[in-house]
Structure formats: C-alpha cells, structure tokens
Image (cartoon, rainbow, N blue to C red; front, side, top):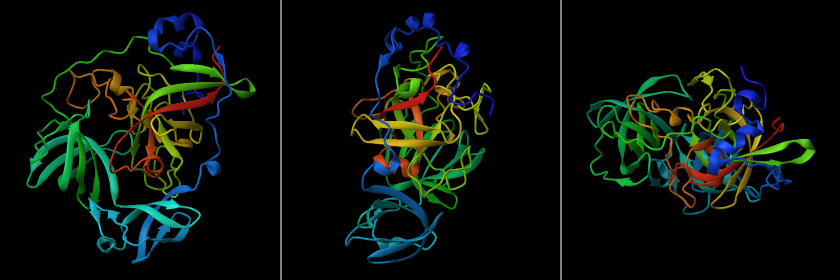
Length: 378
C-alpha cells in the first residue's frame, strides 16, 4: 500500500501542535489526556452472542444446517421463530442454497434471529423499467455493474441526508437519483425493503468542511507510550462475501470485521484505491488486519474489529462530487437518525459484525465512537 502502516505522514496530516487550535469545536485540544482506555476487550470476552453465516444445506422445524467457511454447522431453531427473507416469513419459505445469517446464543447453540439473502447496494438510477429500476452500482466494494432494483411488498423510504420518511406508495424514483438500498438479493439484483434516496432534483448545499479538518476528534494517551485516536460519527454496514473485500479476508463466519476509509496515499476513493478520508475526517492510515475498537453510543456495546476492506466513501462526502450526477451537492453532513444523530460515517462494518450490534434489516447505521491505538503525533 502507498501509505505508511498505522497511518502516518504526520507532517501532511497536520498533527503539529501549532495547527491544533484551528479546528474549533472539533479540536484535539492543547493537551493530551492521560487515559488508559477500558474499550479494548478481546473478542472472546464479549459475551454469549455471536453471528455466523453460510449457505443453507438443510432444515427442519427445529434445526438448520449451514455450510460455513469453517465447515458444516447445525443450529437449533426455537419453536415459532421466523426468518427475514424480504420480510418476516415462516421457515418453510427457505430454500436450499439461501445465504443464511444467524444471531446465535452460543452456550445453548440456539438461534435468536435469522436473515436470508440479506444484502445492501448503493447506486444511481439509470432508467425506469417495468416493475422497477435499473441501477448503476459499484464504488468501494465492487467493480461497477448494472442491476435491477424492484420494491418489496413492504418498503420504507427516507431522505438520504436526514433520514426523514418519504412517501413510498407507490415508490417513485427518477433517472439520476442516488439510492442506498437494504433488501433481499434476487438473481437480477435486489428487492428493496429500506431505501434512502437523494433526489437528482435536490440541490442543497450544506456547510462545507474546513480547509484543514481535524485528524481526530480527540487524542488520549494510551498504554506503552502509544495514543488513542478517537473518532465520533456513525457506523454503517456493507455486504462482503467470504474471500472478498480490499484485503481478501472478509469472512461470513466472523462478526469482528470492518472497512476503514484510509489505507493508501493515492488521492482517490474507488474500489481499488483507498484514500477516502483525505480532506474530510483525515483518519489515520491503517493496514489490513489492524484492530480498532467500536463503541456504540446508544447501547454501550463494544467490539474489537479488524480491518478487512476499504470504506466508507468519506472523502467524497466532503467535496462537491460525492454522488455521481450530483456535482452541486455537498453531502458531508448526512446524519444517522438515532440517539446521538451521528454525522459523518467513520467506519463500515461487515454484515455479521453489524448484526452483533443491531438488526441490519431495521437500520443502516448507529452513532459510535471508534478508537485506534497507534503511534503518538510528533
């Protein structure tokens, strides 16, 4: 990778003390606070809940068998539990080969929640077609491609910037609209159940970022002469199959993986070039496999996660060309509609990792704090 491991062209990143006072309310501050963070547990100490995923091999009324990256697993199914498959459905709607994700109570080996063929895509509407829309997708997680978006039986629609609800009956999109869709994977694309829309007709400019944005919301002195770099905003999620991702290490059998927006000093933000935080949050550069700590500001859950891919597209959210076909729009201030209303995506979690915190069908983000232990600034 082009950038130094753990992040660190400190001169260019403006960590020098003389620059700290320019960042106003987001400043690191004139002093580092001496704190040994409690937010760095090992994955094995995080309780009795895990999330795993795999291809469905067989099922009965009280058991499913899935093929995971580590082999066959049989999971007990409580009486009366449903599965999300484009909506809440009985287990009888499952089909061999479905991609099943399970929230698991580890001690009993019993499923708490099941999702089938859940996915998420972002793209631009290129044309209206019978029964749906054609999307041009791609970006950080996949090479560009065209797929079909069709509305599900029950669909909710909201504004991409504010998450304010929009009329969904019927769903009306136009060419050029940017959409962020959670839904059921179908052979032709996705059947959407939650859709965030940024309209091609919407021309609203929000506050522009400072010329020299902060490199961290704050820094605290950590153990062994290192420092905690602390970022506040929100975490989203993305669909990363086993063996995929920037690092080729995404694994549906793990619920401790994430994407980080600063991995290369390449000046670009694409699916094969990861400099997606420059001129925005300016998060430090990390290497594949680096661990960071995600703290949910709403539920106080904590998870140590490991970098497996690049994202979110944060750099683009702080310059006028964030969304394709929207050159006059600045989307830097998108908010997450939850307890803290976090602004700016600071990390993306893989689908099983997000499911450790929340049901990824019901929400697309949560306000969080992310801590990175790394070399202190000069």
